[in-house]
Image 1: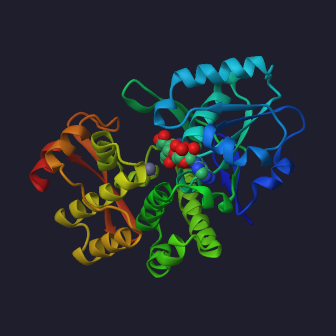
Image 2: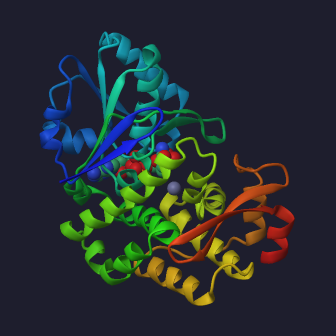
Length: 340
Ligand SMILES: NC(=O)c1ccc[n+]([C@@H]2O[C@H](COP(=O)([O-])OP(=O)(O)OC[C@H]3O[C@@H](n4cnc5c(N)ncnc54)[C@H](O)[C@@H]3O)[C@@H](O)[C@H]2O)c1
Ligand SMILES: [Zn+2]
């Protein structure tokens, strides 16, 4: 087990990589704990939850809403949660985002922690203290920055995860390596088959290194004023792709990275050879690198909805080599000219 401490201006947190859900009790404070989870996790892992009242939310992005928060607050009142209550979220990114937000605003903030159960949430969603819900068509538009006290990353729980969900989590891992860690990138090139087979030692190293990358970026720039933006590599395209196709986030990020690296080559930042390395790794990890039946024009139109857009311009993340990213402002006009 590895403990990764995270120090930010708002709060310190620690991520426990390789810890087991069965050891949870030692991390919980004295007094009342209330668990927030989803239907799937409750069914599979409910029998190993620590003894505590359970609030179970519905499945999928359509439940990341104010209505779900209402439902949670009703239950918290019913269970007589007070300022000393600890909230324990057990689940993937949806549960962690919603429960983290609920814990952050109920009675001006309760203590909380996560057991992160999907690959995507272990390496990304539960690292960095962003939480929140969607509102109308706007994703993650209501939320706060607030770090959980701890995140338990139990790698054995990934065994029960759907295969497509598992593979899609690798997009964020490859992203982390591509923007910040050439050594991890090479490790992935050499060990992708073992990773796909869920070999524990390989998986633990990859997850640990990805969390280190994200947590170091977050420590430098918790509120995304500068460096944290590089974590959005591939994401401006990905959000539009998700919107148009309904693909899983990781699949869309994979295609988004293929497009962003292509743009990096076209704008003279990245060599074609480095771009091909990225594409090969994505494909080896069984991730998609292009969209069928959708053209780039419709994608750019959808990108105009991006909440990170600033007028006619977007902050876009480019690679200038494997392991290093740069952020530049590009106009929609420039994007259209380069791509179409
Ligand atoms: N806060 C952040 O910084 C951040 C970063 C990235 C993504 N996110 C958010 O994360 C969300 C997506 O998270 P996700 O991909 O984890 O999806 P998810 O939480 O919906 O989980 C995917 C599915 O897998 C099931 N599941 C979870 N763990 C399982 C396990 N161990 N075994 C079997 N089934 C399991 C869930 O019930 C669900 O059906 C999005 O809403 C996204 O916006 C947030
Ligand atoms: Zn992402």
